[in-house]
Every structure is written in structure tokens, then in C-alpha cells.
Length: 90
Image 1: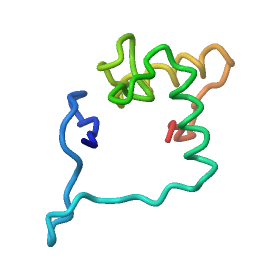
Image 2: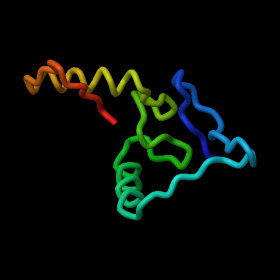
Image 3: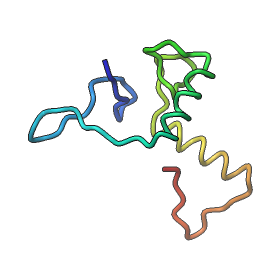
Image 4: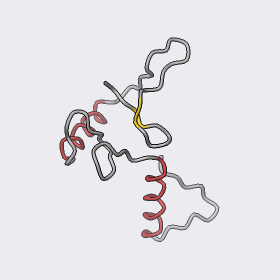
């Protein structure tokens, strides 16, 4: 069963299309799929049901706040100041 990480960090069902109720599908380039497969194989959490991008446990997802915190720390370590710029990780 396919799962998705929700805004609150929980794991649940995929988002559905409003009209049809079918799960939303996103095209994934073959190079991206190859990279994701490699990351999953290299991860210590590589069971079929484990997340590719996980926190400190296979069932603990990284969330928006995690990425923001890591991004801000990386900017600080690199000596980058935001100033008037709107910098974000996307």
C-alpha cells in the first residue's frame, strides 16, 4: 500500500483527486527513480515498507520542519546570510 507523509508528520493515505477520488499520481523521471532506488538500498532502513527519507527510525518521516532546521543550520555553517533574499529548500 502506498503511503504519504502528512503535514503533521504522520503517515497516511495518498492525497485523492477531488473529482474522481483516485490517488494523485506524479510522473517520476527514470533517473530520479534510479537515485531513489539506490538511496533505499543504501539506507539502514531498506525493507519494502520503510521510508526512503526517514528520521532516526524507519517509520519516522522527515517533515517540513526537519528540512527547514537542517537548511538553516547549513546556511549558518556556510556563512550565508539571508539579508533581503528569500531562501528556502524546495
